Image 1 (tube, rainbow, N blue to C red):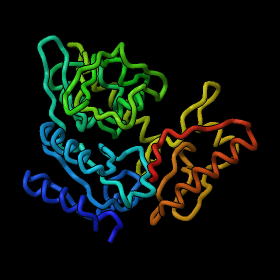
Image 2: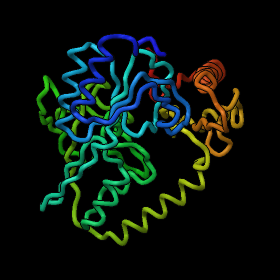
Image 3: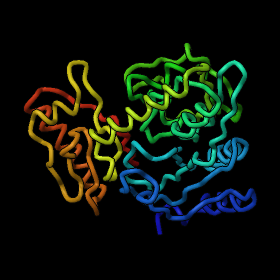
Image 4: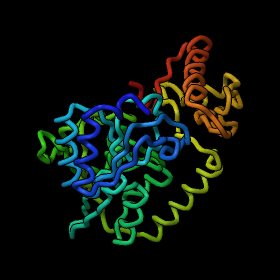
Length: 305
């Protein structure tokens, strides 16, 4: 039993979930959730069905003073320790609504791939940059995720947050964005976001998407579990090139290995443990700093209590 699960707060939360018919799992192994297929065990993972359930759930959790972490697809994260932290999954919060002016509103748990495909079906272009990014709207906004020459902030209009149990809208110009950065904090609760797309040549957009996918398959180790790019690029160079130039491709610790195809990827070759990945990340940073003088910052979020 995890330490947290014996407390009265936990029992109160379970009663709340049962009464409100909110799906949950006790002592859930996050290895089954995240794209790395490596993760800690959380006392409980909860799947609210809609924004109203999310609001009531957050209110209940805060009243019980329970630590929580909101997670989308778990595609760019390493959960190291969660013995007293519960997970709220946004996977069921994936509704998308389209408007006549070419804008759309997507809930925080909607995958970028879903937004892209639904947009194309509605004759809209401008979201093709997201091809191959496995994350959700919420997570992508926090990191200003991007690929294929674009970022999510470029087509953003506004973001909706849950504050004091009320949903508020914040315009894009009130949020700071930069390379893999936004002023949105990890403890901000994003409920949905509005994007502005436009009517366009969806046939050409689909051709571009095929090109992006071919490039991704040729340059990234898609056949192995990973968390995507581990380190952020520096202003002077790409992180992958720095690591490659130090001949670190193929370097491994346990089941964690620096991809021989793309040096900014750490792949799970099978049976990798949390410490394998964590130690390999630390080792790469140390070698790069000692030999190149560069400090690499992680793009991957590492969650520890």
